[in-house]
Image (cartoon, rainbow, N blue to C red; front, side, top):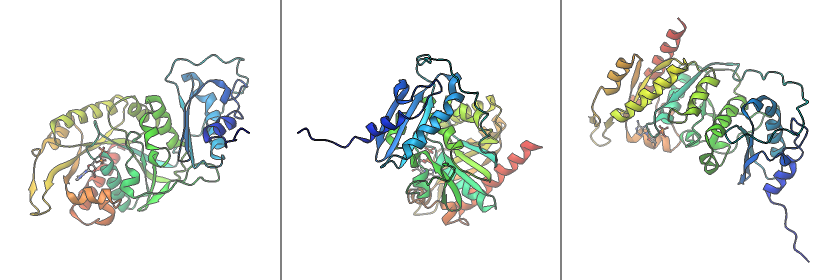
Length: 362
Ligand code: ADP
């Protein structure tokens, strides 16, 4: 007798995707539009290939696919994105018969300010700054959320010590996690990091916009978005698609990264997003033994550069063992030692950023 095996999660996913209707009347599994279907540790993800003009018609298909997959036994997370990158998909067999979808409600309607924290390249401390800045703004009495949109290297779960999976609300949105009084969400909580790494530009973009629209952020004074590093299409699209109130650029003092920072500033200016200021991270080294301050990369470079570029200089954060260790332990310094020197530095940066934001409105 031939042994019978239980169908794999991928097979079961294909079966249920056959129950998801396409705008043209066919079903999603048979449409030939599914790309990158993968399942790791109960996290399932796939992309639906579309033409750019089909985005609105396919929004309900995407949502239905996600809901259906989430209901499968053994699935803890399901992420379905639309991608318009590849060659055009086959034309629909019959003309679409659905009514035009009603316009989607504006995402983040109850969020007063969306602020991007960006850098020209990775490794400059953008995520560390985003988290500590969010905590410093919260300490000023505001309600704050932080979204880790750095799909290539999501670090928010580590920085905030987040574990477990986000819950889903009644309305099937994702509930942000609570960390040190912040509402927090990271792509690292939703998909396997290895899956995230292989995603290409448009898929990344789609995943980011969905994290904004599919998360129940509720009412917030400020949502701080830890952007992917660089100045590519994904950053540009996020800047244009989320009604950004402004951007904070993080740079180290080395000239090279200042050049990168300059590119970041130019990109935001191109899409009319105000630059709220420049943060200089790892400005000088504080020796843990002698307490002495060493300006390894020289002094004043970022402040001068900010003046040259006509953007506010928000402040400098030193390179310290304490900050690195606290970040790795998931206990951000601004939460654990708000009155210490680094807590003070981020407090000043937060106040400077809010001043800049208010200046934009005058
Ligand atoms: P990015 O988001 O730009 O890639 P991260 O915030 O993830 O950078 O920081 C990269 C590494 O540098 C992390 O290990 C972080 O703990 C460390 N780091 C960032 N800023 C500082 C600082 N001011 N002092 C010490 N370590 C820092």
